Length: 189
Image (cartoon, rainbow, N blue to C red):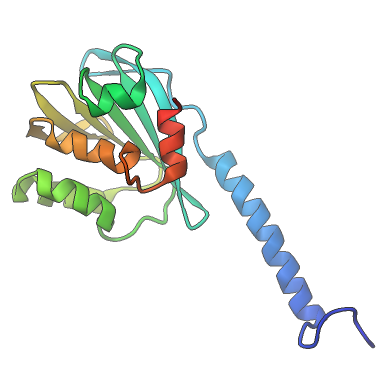
């Protein structure tokens, strides 16, 4: 029986090809459907109320890894406000997958390790390995004070100054972001 396909393309490979296209299509839409599309418009952290400024989803290899949401105390232009550190900012990272790497990803390691002490980095690394789908990381910074990290609303560490927060923000909305799509979603200016 002749088929209209090229040599080497059998009905079996045709089914596999069609199934992979369907899986890709469903996986893409399913991943977005499972992603938390709407982070809370407001949240309280240690008695301070934060307002959602923007959010986006970090996707890697067709997997929604985490949702990144930026919170400000007062509305303003996101990129200018946060990179110039003119007002407090909180970054909320909601883990969207159970497929996290066993180690801190290089981009995070390069961002966080130079900005904190070895002891603080070891604490971060230990907590990163515990992350599971649904967990929430909060990085909160107030000018003139410290950058705080919370895991599921429990304080993990405090780092003095703005260096850590600036490095984190630069990773997402700086000149060379880890994801152009995520930067566009977060900055939206």
